[in-house]
Length: 63
Image (cartoon, rainbow, N blue to C red; front, side, top):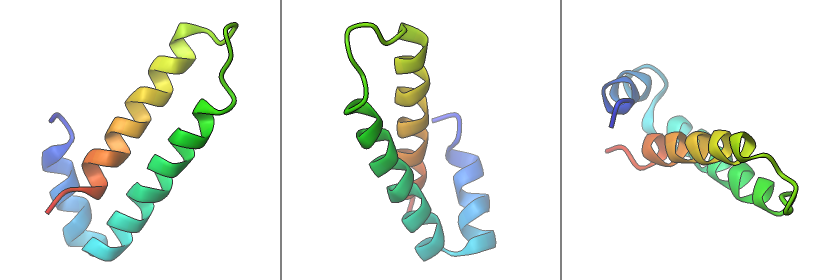
């Protein structure tokens, strides 16, 4: 929710189509990153990917 006000500003500046496409691309990259994880992946890397994916998802779903 911390990024919700910024998402509106980005949509106003670049348009909903561009922001949604970029957000969904970031979500897809986040999901692809999970394929590279194994038992030795540090927790901080998981946290960064989860954070970025949540940020991308929130941006792409903003109306």
